[in-house]
Amino acid sequence: MQDQPTAEELVGAVRDFILNVAMPQLQARDAFHARVAANALGIVQRELKIAPDANAQEHVRLRQLVGVDGTLEELNRELCNRIRNGEFDLETPGLSDHLWETTLTKLAIDQPKYSAYQRAIEKPTE
Image 1 (cartoon, rainbow, N blue to C red):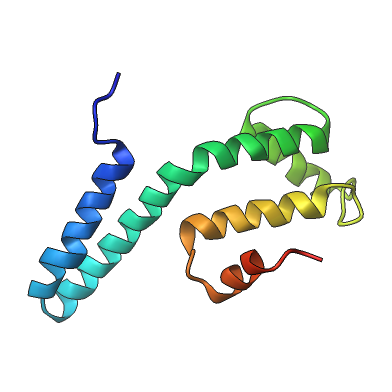
Image 2: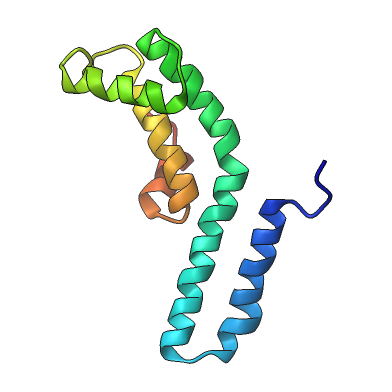
């Protein structure tokens, strides 16, 4: 059993240190690299927080969509093959919703401040 702090909390603490302590003392190129490192840690922190549940939901959607079981990677590969072979298209029930949910999750992890993502989560899809 792991004691506190969690991996997510540790990554957040390092990110906060870089942004609030180290970066203000750095100049030009070093400050830029510190910002890049802090942004990368932000992605890792969101991945640790969001991905477990999101991957489980994606796995369920994929199993329903392709009608077989397998790992998340195997099911994604199967979905890609079916799209590539013309078996699935945007008229395939559930495909569009699956792709939209997967995209929103990726944006929540990679670019949560992206304006199009913000607009997408503010209003329901039509």
